[in-house]
Image 1 (cartoon, rainbow, N blue to C red):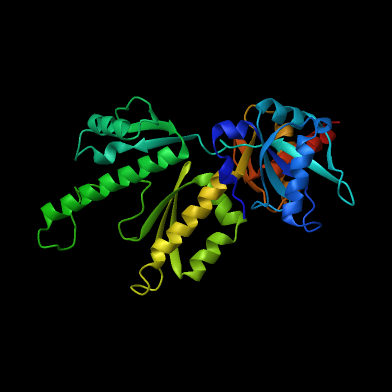
Image 2: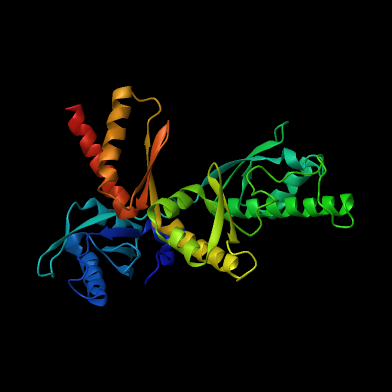
Length: 343
């Protein structure tokens, strides 16, 4: 199966389009790839030089086409209707922008006060800045809180770094307080960061973007089936835009490698989703109650038809998460329903 990771570079994403509506099963994948490439190289279709066609993908009937020039991609999208004329029955296609950076920007608020009794917080922040220069840190507040912004992968690295520091300090505390290794009981010892997993829950830790995790859990069978297959338990800690999973074997000491296998499988699957999913947001804040109600009703109505789209309702906004083609069509239909209700 082809992977959309081939088009993850930001330069390529600007020259890449998502093509939905391809006739699945009517011809073999190789021939369909040739037909798609031929269609989008045709000048009559506003096409140009095609560098790559990725098909099949994880989404049925969807291909990713990368052009040599960004302008060609924009012209192709501007053209309203596309048909694969060589088919026995012309197939109408839906064309949209490829969204590569949907989940790449993450904001997180960290509470570093738990480290205060062990190390200087300003020194800790300086170390983190040197360790992960891709992140942007706000000034450290008096209560130990600090805001951080950056890519999901950079935030993930930060989270893992803090977990390691916390674990290291916890171990030092244990050694100081109980040289013979007895139970750790001190009430003054360092507690783990609030978003980390409890000390009693040992196992493999995995940090995910919350949107990715929610889609993985609610719209994919992979997550539950993998846990079941490997007889694993998973504790999920959602902390804003970051979710931490702690995976452990449900059968005690038997099959100790299960935890690592489950972590690797979920991490690999989530990484693919990171580049495949797109998020659209309907802002509710500042709108009239009637308009808010119309948007919510439209989303609820369409969610039963778009089973691969995850709709998350919040007080200030509604997030629509799914493949590029599905979210494009979903948002388009929501806007259509809203206009009909306004009339």
